[in-house]
Image (cartoon, rainbow, N blue to C red; front, side, top):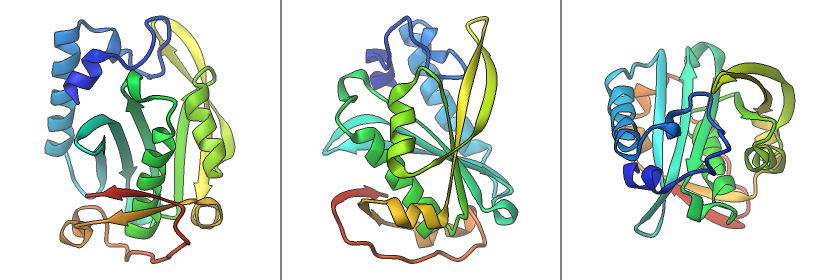
Length: 200
């Protein structure tokens, strides 16, 4: 994942992230990916967690899909964020990655809601949200690289997900670690498969 971040995620003039971590020199950028992964694991607890999933095609790492929650047992809500290596963008992987995370949330963890946030100029992320059936949920303002920027919020509930999903996701190994996420029971559903993705 660190090597992928060094190879490039976005053009230098763009900044899709709330924190401009990709502006760092290559060595520091690679280190920050590893440090963040270890920090998130070390800080994990059932009240507040951020899961980093490594996305791959075959043996090739292509990106990172995150899913996070705070007080999940009470709110039933998760949010997602992701990034893809530049050479893997525009191939539909972003939609598959988000779909896999949403299936883990709704079917695996029994979530009720999922949210996403993207800057107005991040057309790829906005397109994924629209394609998967999210609904607009207002705006947020951030300061990035010293300038104020507007981000669009998106929200989906369990019913919307089951109405709109078009990817069958196989989830492996969740029972062994389910208690670290939530006390909510899983919600089971089986749509007709169109494509496939897997979470391990």
